[in-house]
View (cartoon, rainbow, N blue to C red):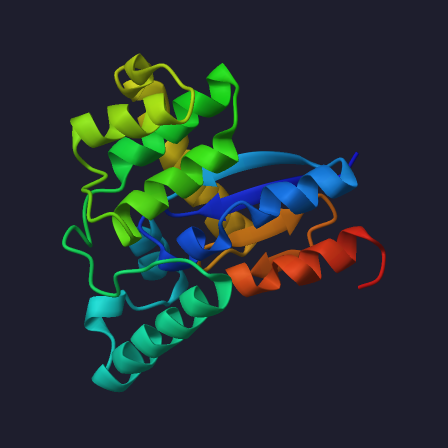
Length: 198
């Protein structure tokens, strides 16, 4: 049975635009997924990247155009400059880590957190928002409080794992054969790889 390590950031617009297409591909191929939320700003610092607000204006302008085009192509609403971005990604990430342990539709939960940030003008660092998103996706809202220490430790491990695995951006999908796919626009390539066509 194939396996995919999914490195992502709840602050990433491209994680939002990935939607639940990864889960569809995984189901098609009988693949399992380990969800590995990470601190994307720390990842940039560790791997030679530059956080978006610090990039040259030319790069910032292109990024906004690319986000608008990609979201339109995917039929997803997006606010290119959300009110609560950047914010602290740790609370939503800890909740996802706890939810993965509890079991349930973690892919839908990831999408709900990113949608809250990029389409719903909600602050995913706020406890009330974290609880609402958990509950709306079939999880116990109390997961927001459970295992905070374990969640923090796993969140830090995910960053180290990502650097060790060659990850430099989000979302990144890595198969058990160490094939790496970076970006929501590479999910089709991941599908082809799992089909043995790529």
